[in-house]
Length: 135
Image 1: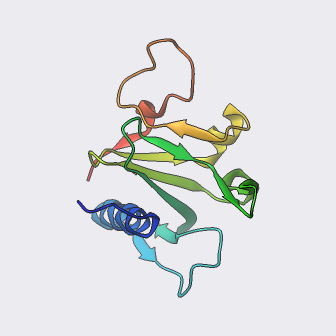
Image 2: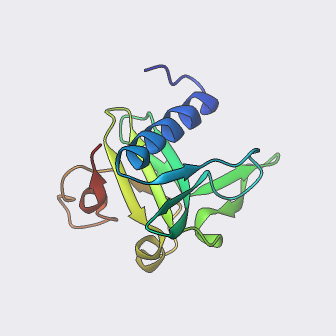
């Protein structure tokens, strides 16, 4: 899997999300541009949900929940600031996580989460293992 750039990571994350939702009976709708706060809309049984897709190629599988920019790299956006329904995350080992945004928001105002396939050994952090899914 080639994930050398942010664009590559975006493509891989979106592709895995399409594969997951499509293989689980959802209709997947993709926007015509990339200026909106969601990556796709999925529909199943008449229920529409907005989805943001994230992919981590790092060894610790960290997913940033913020967007940074400008000369000082300051945070200008958080995914929790938008009315998203689902955060779909995947890592370099193709583990996939389907996280309801309401659960992430209830957890608190975090800058990032780490994708884990087992419970956190120290009991700290957002327990992403509970949200693992398969195709």
